Image: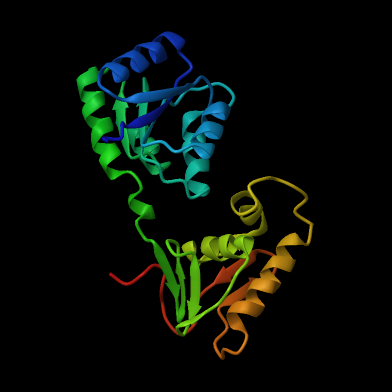
Length: 238
């Protein structure tokens, strides 16, 4: 059975959105629609899409802000920006904000379709790493296992998600707010000690009986996992 491509159209012009949905449907592509930036961000965060088609000028939250927030959440769904702002500087700004392609309005649907198909084939490229490694610590996303020096370390589901997010961002400071939004998936008092408790438990599990510490607390900033003995980003070797 062939899986049909599914995209999200974030466009406040209802007539334009209806036209796109109909044209994509005739091309065999399933689409959802969001009419403002906040709704689009929520739908793109909570559902799986092959491609996002985003207008820049949107109510409630502009298109570039939507893209920036998705990338900050480590959501790498390919994005095609569709906008009446078509000058070179506009296109550069859109791509630098995290867009993968940029098509100015007016456009030919055949070109839009071709670009969407290309992006659809690229979907999930940053997520192809099914495992992460920092020093002698390894996390396998497929088997949902963690090992250090070959010895398996049992983790609770939340601890696994916490470690996965830290390792995905290895070598970079991860703030408490980032952890609350990406590991716990909701906002609450950043002064709560729930993060400290989980980090403490995780640290005890991955560093107990090992000489080399990996998980650091960066005072006043957040946390960082890093192999101090090597320069690495946490991703597997080629």
